[in-house]
Structure formats: structure tokens, C-alpha cells
Length: 127
Image (cartoon, rainbow, N blue to C red):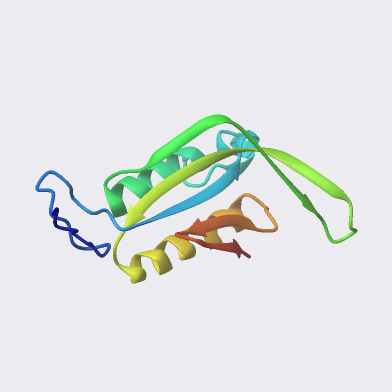
């Protein structure tokens, strides 16, 4: 009879695995990432995101392939944009708060109405 091993998200019986925590994903319009109109302190939005994620979390994943986002605006018109996907993982919930504060600032800088974020199995709009 084999032994059944159960694990919570912080435990593992495999010595080669290191838990990174919950995955958090956010999407930014591709055309705004390198646009000079959105530079701040000499940085593109892409460079600012890179700097923040590397300094704070020491790693992230970016998917530059086109992902289209669709939504309706205040006038009930359907709009869409080509987005780039950024993914980062961490265990401490206060880190999520820090990321959200960064995204609030980025949203204002990019003149976006909202930034779509997912954390684990939850979805949010950062406004």
C-alpha cells in the first residue's frame, strides 16, 4: 500500500522545489510601454515596470506576444487593446499591497482607466 502525501502551499516533500507563493498577473497596453509620451524620470513604462519588479521581487515573467483585452467603456462602447502580460509570485500579502500601489501610479502615468490584475483565483481592477 502506498503512502498518500498531502501538501499545503508552503510545504513540500520534494527537496528540489521552492515555493514562490501565489502568482500575480497584470496586463499593460503594448503601445504605451515604450511610448515617449509616458516617460517619467527618463524611464519608459517598460523600464519602470522592470526596475520595480526586479528590485522588489528579484524575478518576473513578461509575455510580449499580443494578448487582446476587450471591455466596455463608460459610454457602453466596446473597446479593445493589445496587451502585454507580466507575472510575478510572492508569499507575503503585504507585497501584493506594494504591487497595487505601484500599479496605481503606473495607471495614472499611462492615463489608463484601470489595470486588470489577477492574484491566485481572484481578479481585480486597479483604478
